[in-house]
Image (cartoon, rainbow, N blue to C red; front, side, top):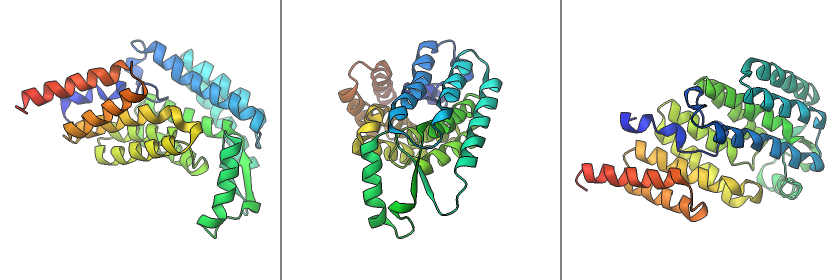
Length: 260
């Protein structure tokens, strides 16, 4: 990871929940508020769609408020309690547990699982309230804010397993992998996030973030032309995004410096 880019990586995927490190919180306060509120928004969407563990939704929202107040330890304790309660609810060995915010997509999943694998039967699938997935996401945010990248990846991996249609954890995974200096793996994660965001309407809002993440990873890999394409594509979705505009300027500066 070249030094010029390293200090800029954390602001590239600005709409993601994890893309704010502790040192940047003050400078990006507005963005932190927006991204943390996305957790609450997702949980509210899930309320009407049901799923076991719905009563844990308020605790996840409370943990977000604690994070906004800088009380990470208290938020983490609350989230650990939420996850423990879900673990108790999800203890059956002959059941496949999944999180879906969107009822239509849950039905699509049920229709497809029998065709994709003999290991899963629609009759043994139980829907879990989305607050479980958001608890995992918020734990990943806390780990990332402490630069505990491996821990963040662990929580994101769990969310990916339980929320197969969601783009967000893949985008966040890309960010954590960038933090570990694993740019090629990060690019793969961002591409997966973009594919899911394109395929599923509930994740559509993550398309531009995934493309910006791809651009960041491509810069790290020295693939400036590819990075420029990714950032331009992101601007076709979010035309006013200043991060993408600035990254394109940076790419042009790098090309000029390299005589390209």
